[in-house]
Image (cartoon, rainbow, N blue to C red; front, side):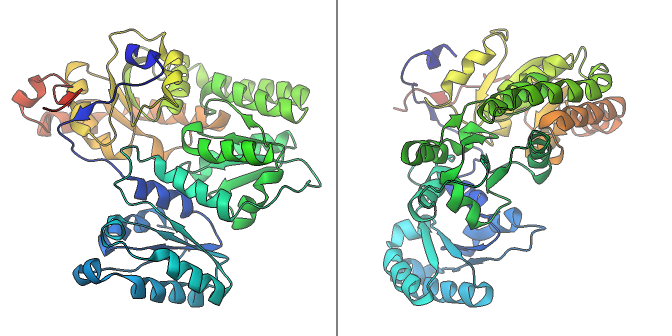
Length: 440
């Protein structure tokens, strides 16, 4: 945290990497939830595998150009042209997003010529998202490239709406988490333009006419909110994710102030806090230590909720840290300096090292890490399977934690039978022995 106090962050080199997502995956996530658009992943079949995950259970179409070895040498222009024509003829979408991949960066396909030619021929917006996995170490930049395309090709000039509305930006949140917030705003009679997920292209087009914009996670949507503010004068409401009593209070109050709903917000908050007071009083984390993994904005709000429910943070894992979000570390300054702090996405061996040295009663974070955490005796509470936003989310977290805490035989048995997934000599090493300022 001391290193983040200046204007620049000292970059470090990880000499050992287990896994981490790239900007292509984040770009796919941002566009996969748009109803009236089609996605084409221009690359090898393996590069399109994430499309299965992001579109599972959804009736949406996505395509791949399925480039092979010869295409990487001779170019894949014809396959791209064929994929666009097929996608258009089968779906007649309002827009087609083409997602770049590392192969395109290597063989230097003339994607722009294909896009210009077929855009005129089909009368459909075709937007090339130039991500290739090489440009940056921060996968979140995939969101930025997508949002740049929105601002350049989709957002329309500002028009005064009949009734003021709020831009509610969401990318990675589940439908239930979004609904938990929208239902609160509906009580305040605040219309929401939910973008980009769970909406159509019309929501993106009219975003310039909103009274203000708010994000369920500023780290993911900062680029487009800043762009709307600079180009169209749509103010940004800065707030932490609406997690826990304090987080929801701050979120609701700041939005209500823009719509002159202060009195109604006070009444809503009082009523909702009264409804969940019984569950909150059960304190499912009382006397428990929790290892928390989430992005930094959510960590700040979740830390408050964990404390509210009687728990203690034993370690924190965040996917990335840069100059844009480093200021959030000040909100965690009340934590003891001995609390381990990991900046690494997908590095389960680092989390294993922390759990081995600082045993936790609960692990709150990604489902991908849940099994590894359980082998160290930590009860996993994966966030991608529950609602944790809003007042409904507080009740859900309490309910799940109580259930898991009273029935942890599986976790105990897993630890006894399988033990740690790494050797004893590995776990004896310092958790950051392979993270260097420079490699010589």
